[in-house]
Length: 270
Image 1 (tube, one colour):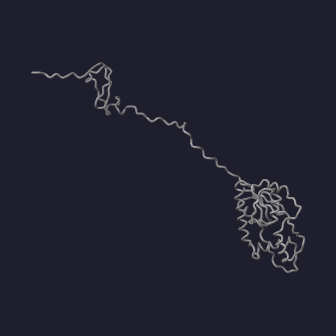
Image 2 (cartoon, rainbow, N blue to C red):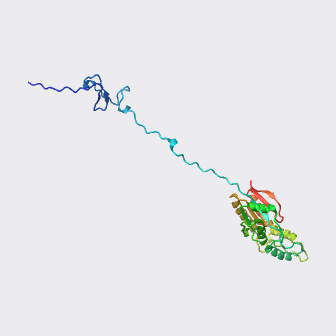
Image 3 (cartoon, one colour):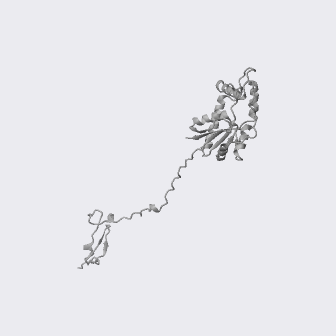
């Protein structure tokens, strides 16, 4: 009767790593048979043994944020200080005021005044010339007396002519022919009748002139808010109307020479 001979299990050398199908690994030692030394290590073994879940995990390398370009800083907000608005009256007209006129005669006199120029031989005041030199924009009424004033003051600089700045009308009331006044006083009477009693004789009314003054003020404010001084060479009463609109919008009269010829009134935003 023959006897089956089973081969002996292979032996492992000392300190040889032996793995098992269960997924663990163990370092053997002392040259003992591997069958006696294999230990299967699973994830449910004690904490003093290291399973696969206990292997050190590789983490992604930390980002070097210092090396990354930073986002560009937002541009600093630049605040532009508004320029000044200077309302100046034209020089002295050539038409004489040394006369006595009836109301009808004054009506004709005013019509000639509106199309006339300046009296010859005048020199603009240095202060007004300096204002024009420093202005970033110069406007002038389209009336001849304002145009000649601009030519004398601006010294070759560009002047923008605009009918927006012409004088408000001065139609006198009808008085008896025996009633006579100098043009200066007829102008005051006509302005009162136009302003208080809406006497316009088909010309621009007070309400219409106030709308025009507001339009002029807003045009000047828009230009001055860009940082430029703005000079206007125009007329006494309409300049007064524009100045009132500027004050209503927060502009302050900081320099006042009144309403005489060649005078100026300076407004600044406060």
